[in-house]
Image (cartoon, rainbow, N blue to C red; front, top):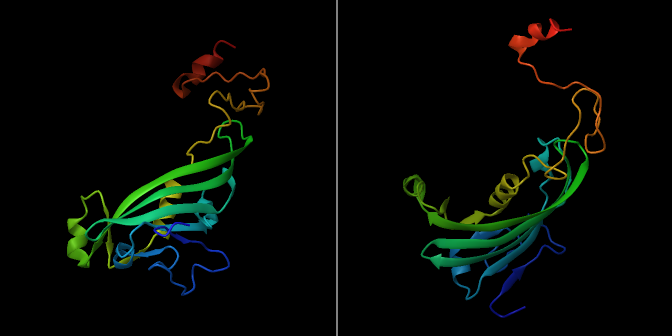
Length: 196
């Protein structure tokens, strides 16, 4: 480990205890203390994000989210937090329902500005930076938000997946079926029966 690089890990320690190193209580960052270091403060953590997928029935399992971020001051009261997040997902294809294992690599690059009071918070609304009130903030919610945003909306086993027959359930990737799945405008359904 280089002299200028400060590394935090969660080995044998809970991120909820009072242990503090280099101005960071694990996923908490303190602007003034980060500014006192020559190099970036590096956070390496794992987060349990299983509660973030409870609304997704197509995701059957998720690994802990791996966090690898570096924090450094790039201006007065302005901190840059960048790096990457990663996780493993077990999902189902949205077309044929086959199980899929996916690896997520999520780039993370955000800037946080320390503000004081609601007046400054309102002034920063149109800024590209994220305003945080006070001199310290918890990075966990921002990592969780980035994870949720990057979840696959419609997982596919392949781009050309043909899906399942809506009538008999035949997997069209494995073969066709004899079902008539011609779509008919409901307003014209009565006309179709005239030709039978």
